[in-house]
Image 1 (tube, one colour):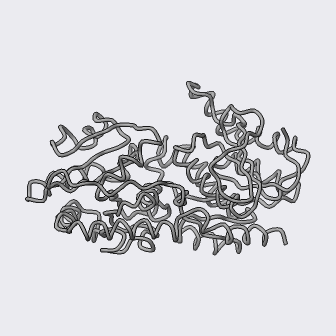
Image 2 (cartoon, rainbow, N blue to C red; image 1 turned 90 degrees about the vertical axis):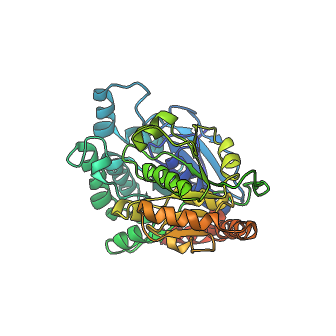
Image 3 (cartoon, rainbow, N blue to C red; image 1 turned 30 degrees about the vertical axis):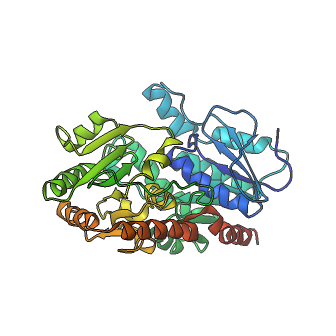
Length: 397
């Protein structure tokens, strides 16, 4: 099946299913477009499906289809094969697919792919006068990229961020920092934070108290760089518990061995590692927590991004304990949608956890309601449908 009529191509070497961080971002964007009546084809790096297949789960008059273009190196590819794909041929399959369509897309939205992918798409869009829009969600820290600060992958990322994206027709920026950076280089920028389908996310009843311990949860992948300072969270939970502030930490995502390695040894008894769960199970477990916890260093990479974990916690009606990085302060107010740590230190988190343990059940329920309301008001993909549609229409004039 080939597309005919007006449609938008959302392309990149990201992989499905929706559970992966990059594809969850794409879900939010194409959800906004569908809610605004646009017809979107998501062309990802997967090898399947070979023809556009309709995707369900989106509200609105628009539609979303998915096709796999096989841009991503196959599982098990050797270093040489993967390097050639990433630094030489990246984007060729996507351009070939665009050429094969009976009608050109009204816009191409680019998500990821680094320098070579952006180069291929810019050249095709310029030749065919199709507006190219880069969705920029991060400012990578070379210390945590494979190959390091002076490696080829970091160089490719930085070249895309600093050279190719400012030369696109428009930018969708995930944060104020990135909005300001690109606004100084191109006049067409719109800010869209991480979004989810809040309206259709069912809520369980608030967790029943089965003991004196406060339950906090961490759901995600801290990565090799321990970006979410999970080791410090474990230490803070242990110290708070020993300081007569009963607390239990439930960790979803990493294995027990991975968490123990980050923490530098055996885990305390009040830390329970549940490992990797299905995407359907995660909300059920998270909603049984009193809070989720997110601690990050106030570095440029953290301030440029917008945590999907944070967005999904509010959507699940679970208030957040966190220090403020990036735009989190627009959505997390102390004592309203959660509790704000003054900084990212262990001691700061200990004191905030102790404060949380002293909250009444009425106070905790009030925070849960406010968290969900904030998500519905600001982080549901439907909220950004009009602004994103107006932005794309302006690029065609």
